Image (tube, rainbow, N blue to C red; front, top):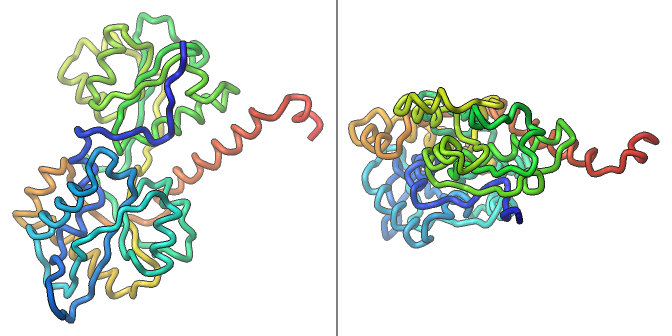
Length: 322
């Protein structure tokens, strides 16, 4: 059986739009749209990587930014450009930060870690879900499958939850396999597929249509709470640490005062009536500033995968001579 093409950041689907918006749109929601004519206020140019909006037409994304920017305003003397930048990857964001064509950008943490430090401010924002900015991931199998170890999954079928907050799950699973000298997921499993809803990730394992799944801890708990029989029939094979999946960052050359005003605008707006309503729509609890050290374990995970995969790809005789 052929393995499906798979990347560490699976494609997003329409059902993930709401969660994606919340993580990076909040600053835009709290700034006043750019008006015609001269204006003394500071213009902020917003951008995001394409991986944040693979489920949306670019024109739809731009229209949404304009619409929601009109919902909330602030007296922080800031204006947001009506034409957000859409960048292909971290390198494109780095170029935009370097030449000043973007001031604020949202992206998966992996992209953020690839941008040279001299181009980005150490101040970053993250969105929380259920009062936490991190996500834990579970590797789940059926209790009666006979699967007791990672090695038992060789040649089996895996389904992963397909959402922006889940992209690190495959990276984490890759490291788990590498630690035991096993192949990467796209070669280790007979098939790797993605489901756009948590229940479509977990239920196929329950009904023995798939052998294992990777899902967020939070989603799994909710599904099991609604369907108690699932917890009796399913078994958690591994649990990840908590990782911050995506962030919003700022161009380093922006003055500290402007960055401070942007962050204050974003944080203050969520305590307004409209702000709370928008958070509810976005399925988030809060938007807050976090420190870069909260991303350290993602950096370590990426480094560990690179090191382990390099070791595993080296012939054993060569390893012994080193």
